[in-house]
Image (cartoon, rainbow, N blue to C red; front, side):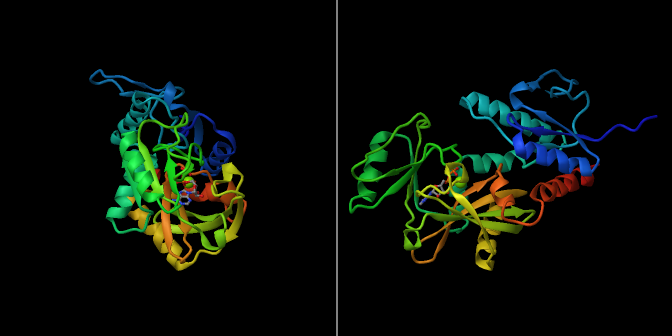
Length: 300
Ligand SMILES: Nc1ncnc2c1ncn2[C@@H]1O[C@H](COP(=O)(O)OP(=O)(O)O)[C@@H](O)[C@H]1O
Ligand SMILES: [Mg+2]
């Protein structure tokens, strides 16, 4: 009898270069993969029946690699995360775990957990009413200082604004009713740089310097990527953040202030690695897949 081919799901709505990289690396392990959108999955509540229907899969996938959870209404996001939770609870490795994705997709929860653990992260205020936000803005920008306003579930620098005592609060289409206001970190020599570190299985594997033309240093906002030798203090900081968030792998954003202190500004549980790949000499997708397949093999 023909042996069943091992198969996993890559959860994404836009496979692109990252999806192809993952597929290629899975193939080296002789593992087939299919792209799956969470929007096409169905939860079935009927005792004795398989809970989650994943299109294209007659039997459960061996593992789920999460490359994208699309945004949407609160109900849609919760539904999509519930699917990942149900799959994880049924014993299927979900990479990153739904809990780790929840802890990091919500910037306020990440900030709370990091700060509580004593990990340096910029001073941040999260509130709901414009009155409270205005009081914080006025107080913090009294002497010409700036603060950063970010969408709670944002990414790639979209919807982030620099506020000062002249700008007032800014509400764009990304604003979803919660203010996440953060002290602006002025960088050395007024350079627009920050550091992205890839942490995998608890170990900082590689880093790059991102250099922007403006203060936002996301690659998708036009920043360039430069190789960076990982210094121990940066590696330790990124690793400790991932330990606190209990995350299998992450792209950790770190910023250095004028005095040379480092702060974690974000931990990405579904990081892009195209930019980092261009400045390192090992195959990032292969390393991620080796770790993911390791999890699959441990339970099968
Ligand atoms: N507190 C801050 N001070 C200065 N620059 C910041 C601050 N927070 C974010 N930035 C800049 O904005 C970019 C995007 O912020 P980040 O929190 O990583 O959100 P996103 O999820 O959109 O990437 C950072 O890479 C950095 O360049
Ligand atoms: Mg970021």
